[in-house]
Every structure is written in C-alpha cells, then in structure tokens.
Length: 285
View 1 (cartoon, helix red, strand yellow):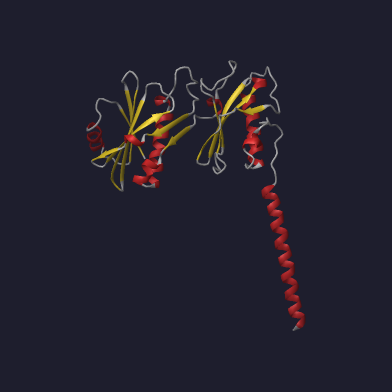
View 2 (spheres, helix red, strand yellow):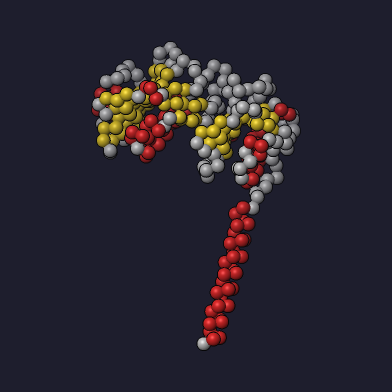
C-alpha cells in the first residue's frame, strides 16, 4: 500500500515537472522575437512607443523597407536605419496610432497606422497628403501594390448610441465604403488623388430625426467644398436603409443607398421626401 502511495506521488511530481517544462517552452516560443532579413529601422520608435512589442516593431521595420524598395526607381540604396518619426505627427484614436515617418536619405515619407489589437491588419501605410509632403522628390503610389486610403470616422457613438452597436458598425462600414469608392473619392486639390488619408466626423450639432429617419452631417478633414449627409431609415428591426449623399462645390450630387429592403418604390418615396433630382446607386446587403 505504501509503495502504491509513493508511486502516485512520484507520478504527480513527474507530471507537474512536465507541465512546468511545457509551459516554459510554450512561453519561449510565443514570446520569441521574430526577425527579418531586411529592415529599415525607425531610429526613435522606442522613444515614442516603448510598450509596443518587439515583434510588431520588427514587422513594421521590415514592411517599411519593403515598401520603400517598391517605391524606388533603383537609383538609391534603401538604408537599414535613418527613418525618423516626424515631431508632432503622432495621433491616437482609441487603440490606433497614426504618425508620419520621414526617410531623409531617400527623400520619402509615409503615413503609418498601427493598431496592436487588430490581428488582421495591425500595420498599414498611406501616402502623405500635399500638406504633409516635405520632400519635393517624394513619389508615392501605394495603390499599385495593394494599399488603400485610410478612413477614420469619429463620433460613431452618435449612431451606435441610438441604433445599437451592430447596426452602428454596419452603417459606419457603409460610410467608409462610400467615401473610398473610386467614383465618389474625396480628394483635395494637389493631393495624391487615390492615396489620401481622411478623417470624417459625425457632427454632433447636426443630428435631427423625423418619421423614423435619423439625419447626420459628416465633416471631412479635407475641406474641398464637398458636403456629406447621412440619412438612416430605421423603420423596424428587420429593415434598414442608409442614404449617403455627397454634394460638390458645383452643386452636383452623388448618392448611394444601402438597403436590405426590396421595395425600391418605398425607398424612392422616402428619399424624395428630402432629396430629389439625384442619380442614386442602389446597393443591397
């Protein structure tokens, strides 16, 4: 009986030791720093972001090197170091950091967006606007390698607070799609037309409602004379229509309606109650 107890105790000790060893090995593997063959270091990155992981830092430096090489004509060598975060350019919205990186040796600048909590798309790059450009030699064509403009919608809680989180996020995605679609692109004179970063803000003072319709004006970060307004028809829990219209400085208007309601006539009657004479693009969801 004594031998059996000793045997069980011994087994428990062995299993405990194996568990500790396994936990240590897993911890080492998970936290092991990932390195890359090529990178372009941002010299002051850890000064501004000391708490971000080394793996995210290394991935950023690798992507920055790859991106810079893709934008080069081959006449200059892409350096391993020398990139600098532009002073005063860092902005933080929720978990997302945005800043400008300048690479003086190759006369290039990029807008970097980092969201450590976004597992799928935690690092993105965008071209600087004309106002952000400091090198006359700067060339930036991120669309050619699969990058897209950056859209930030502020004060989204003005929608989610009324219509709920799920519908609020859905409506936000419609707004983002509308302002980034090629035919309805917001551009500022002289900017890189297809590669600008935009911030849109739901105007707190603009909110009105009538007949199940919520109305918001949307302020764009680039003032080029265009005006946006969002109409939301929240008739019942199973039906939703979102009408987004952009009016240009010449008073021409462009609109898209996103709806899961198949009754187009009813939708047209709804739209005509506050807007007429506008060519509308219908999109079902």
